[in-house]
Image (cartoon, rainbow, N blue to C red; front, side, top):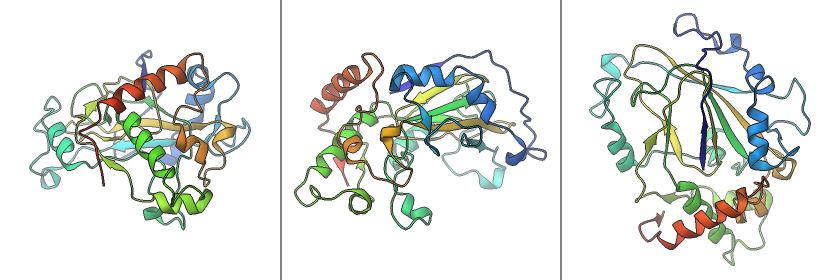
Length: 273
């Protein structure tokens, strides 16, 4: 599930100069607190259920965001599959082949945490700060429908007898490194202009597009959660078993489960690793 909302195409005062950009100097929280983002998220998760992924209450100190940047590559850094210009989308085929995608909050052990972190948030919210409408000027690339099969794959794994009695850290460790390959889904670039918002299901496989342009790509990301999602470092078995349980907006979960069932019925080309 990827929901895209068009904004007013304002740059929010950002600067495309790599020489002057400092992440600490860009205040991101007003983009969340002084915009319709939370209202949109509540339409998916249910009214009054949205929280920060870092706290259990709305608080001006607890809405840290991520500034995602993709800098233009110099000639010496460009590999064989790097696009020749911003309109070249041929790189998507190599992304399809090499399977170098991720879902946020999975396999975090590789980043130095003692225990892998599974399902730490409910919805990924991205707000474009620069133009990302061209195929190859940075931005979000998603694998449409991947959340359905990844969700079903995880649900099957945790139902296996050897994992049935595990929870929390033990379950997270047992699931580490066990995501499926996406053999039947071609990646798609999400075109966005400044002010556009994208809301992404946490199981959607994604990655960043290369930047063959002249400007730095910038997107503000917020990982929103509900109280049911639990602490950031917890593994919630009920949400792993049902990827739509947290989506309590009108008709959202039923539509999501119906779509997942349809994809699962035609998922012969998906293989686990």
